[in-house]
Length: 182
Image 1: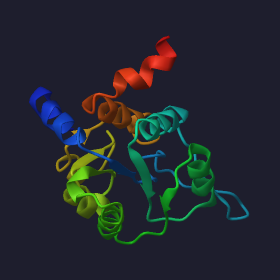
Image 2: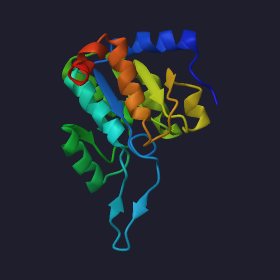
Image 3: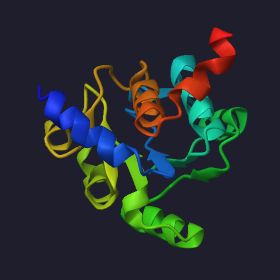
């Protein structure tokens, strides 16, 4: 599997430095992609607390977080609410169009947006935004076309890895860590 090498890492960090709005897919990115259904038909998802704290740190540093998912889920609504993420968009068919609209609403360029997805349905938005990332266990077509490939899999810290990369690239890491290292 292709990994981001030293020179590419510098390029990825350069692209990440200007991101003010970062979007994330859910199944396969914020979760491991497994879909759980109860016998009553209720959908359940498992989310990483490590990823969740990374998303909170990103928001506290002034980067807006958006969740853009092709599926709708009450579990996802609750998770977004728990993390204070207001830009929750579920049941989205055209993620690129949505991210473009979000950028326009905020008066920012598409180059100032980022997205993290894992499957071929995410390629249009990944190719349109300013910074693209994926998980270690993403589809090969995605891995070969993004700016950054996390070393961890979906639902297992890959989102946190990207959040940390954004914070470091934007020179916000030390401030984000200040309360933990005091």
